[in-house]
Length: 373
Ligand code: ATP
Image 1 (cartoon, rainbow, N blue to C red):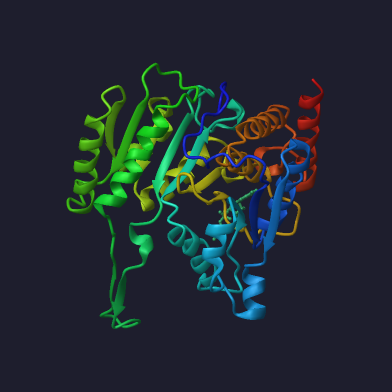
Image 2: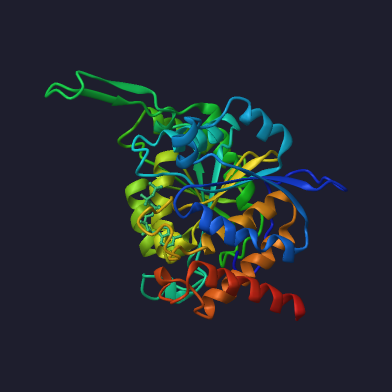
C-alpha cells in the first residue's frame, strides 16, 4: 500500500477473546531462512499468535515419503486461521512432488481461489523502468488460483518417441471465472492510494487465440462489469498487458486474469518493483483459512548463504495480518519495510550489502523506532 493504510475486503470474521492460530510451513531452500526472519516481528507487533510449525518439505519427504498427510487439509481448514508459507522446491526431488502435493494441494483443497499479488513500488530506485514513480507502480493482480492448466488434466501418448503427443487442458468454469472477477470488483472499490479518481478493473485474457476458454472470460466479464458502472472496466490481451505493465503501469488499479497468465504477469510485476525479493502474495478464500507466501521459490542457488532477501516474507506476513483483521499490524510492518528500503538497508539483490538476518534486524529496528515515536 502506498500512502494509505490498507482496507482489505477478504478477511476473517472477528474472533474476540481468541488467539488466532497460524500454521507455518517454512519448506525448502530459502523458505526457512526468510520465514524465520519474518516471524521475529510477531512479538513486537503485540498481537499474540498461536503458531504451530509443520515439517512438510523435501527433507521431510526424503526421510518419510510423506508430502501432505491425510487429514492435514481438514485440520488446517478447521483449526487454523491462516497459513504462513515459505517455499517448496529442491533439486533432490526433481519431479516437484512435494510442491505439487502440498502447495497445489492446499490451493485446491482449501479452495483458495484468489491469488492476490500487490505490484507496489517501494522506492523509485528499485524500478528498472525510467521515470516511473511510486504513484505509477501501485496496483493489484488477482490471479485465478484453482483452475487453468494447473488442474493437470491431460496426458501424453507414445512418450519419448518421435511420435509423442502431449496435451495439457486449460480448465475454465463459469463459476470459477465469475468469482475471481467479482473479487476484483470488490477489491477495486476499496481505497488503495491510486492516483486515479475512478476505480479501475482491467481483465486480461487471450480470447483471440483461445475463443472458447477465454470467450467465457470475456462474456462473464461483460456481465459483471455491467453491474459495476461506477468502476472503469477495460480489457487487454495478455501480450499487450505484458507490454503495458512496463510501458504504462499507471493505467492499472486492479488486474484480473487466469491462473497461467497471472503467474507470468506477476513475475513481470515483481520485476518492475525490484524483483522477487520484494514480491508478496496471498492465496485467499474470503473469510476462511488462507495461505500467504512470498512469490519467490526456494532459490536453491542462494540457500544457506545468508543472501536471501527476507522483505518479501515480511510483506507477505503483513498481508496475513490484514487477513486476520489486524490491518494495523500489516500497515506498521509495510511501513517498516518501506523505511528499510528507502534507507538502503537491504540485501544484495536490491543493491545493498546486508545479509538475510541483518536485513531482518533492520526491519525490527525500524518497527521499534516507529513504536517509540
Ligand atoms: P522454484 O522452482 O522453487 O520456484 P527457482 O530457483 O526456480 O525456485 P525462484 O526461487 O523463484 O526460482 O528464484 C529465481 C532466482 O531469483 C533465484 O535463483 C535467486 O537467485 C533469485 N531470488 C529469488 N528469491 C530471492 C530472494 N528472496 N532473495 C534474493 N534472491 C532471490
